[in-house]
Image (cartoon, rainbow, N blue to C red; front, side):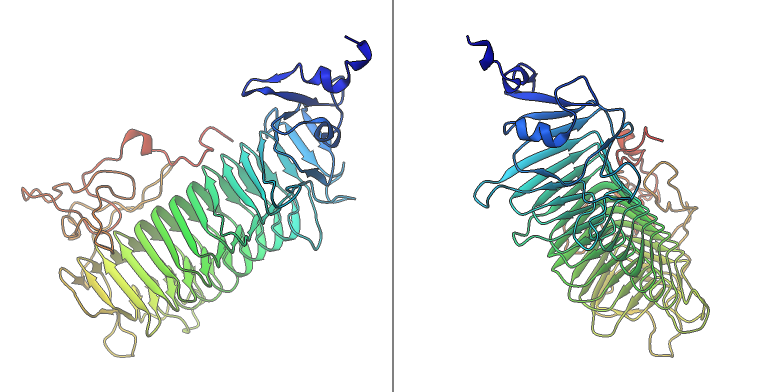
Length: 494
């Protein structure tokens, strides 16, 4: 063989990717290794290859354009940092752009085990990462931090993305401090075992979602919006949240945790929403339009609104509460007398249903409507501890089917639990909610576990007949061992 034919590309092909015997691995480091830049490694790589960042410290590059299916992996997100300039926000730009070469040639890129930081795309989208149509990006064990853009401080998604065991923190944007998502193809954004924290935006402190959103086993906390949706602003067609903790987010206007503007349905299951605040309405959640919101096995506590709906403000659409505990939330937080309903505010004409749920210990600084203001369209086997005064036009009431409803009685709630676990509200042994619910959700579908994953029903009142309890917690039932710690992917981290 002619020695001149043994080119650098030929040498690189010797480093075989074990996950794909036909693929090569290209190393990037300060030397000696294959390349000193990701740009150069990308130019040499074939589709399916891996680019390995053998870096401990900061690798300085900007506007890295990925236009082929690749894996880029670092030592770990704790030690390998990819940033656009040596100094934060000085001469920077976007860090990575992923774009298919043409609409008929989709690409799939995996980013694993490094940090993207200090990206700034100015008035454009995606300070750290921009995913264009035709591209799918899988983020695994990544950190995206201290990035800035007009849309999506950490990342903006026009194509598709999955985010697993990753952290998005301290990013900022006008819309979507962490993520701005839009797609003409209605491709869902999938987030698993991840944390979105301390991001800021005008709306959608952590996420501004225009398309389907699917979040599981993740945390959204300490995010901030100057307008709407401290953690999430949803205009998506479908949203699903399962085993999510959403806490200590702030919206200066509405929806301290979540604001929904348009869409079809938002389903929240086996989750906790607590400690969020709004400068106007909906400390935990505000539904502003025709969205159907369904909460099943959800614990909501210590949210606050300066006006109405400390936990939930239902301005339009449909609200379904099933096996949900809403406790210790506050309305009229500034004490000026303008707000109502520490628990749930139901605007006139909204469709709302309550099933096997508890509203208790909520407060209204105006001392008018602590647990609820407005009318549930139907309800059964639920407990509302303080329905407020009969006079005044906004008493908490239930029309339609009302079997098993308990009004104006103490709920018998024990101290909130959940250190290291999914936050929840246990029942005291004397609670009238024990064995007083039904084992179904708002649609009548059978349920076999509570918010923690503990089996139900359990015979909690020793009557000889097991029946589900009201609320998100099943008395005398124990969660399986694997559910005792809330697993968002950061249990072993700092």
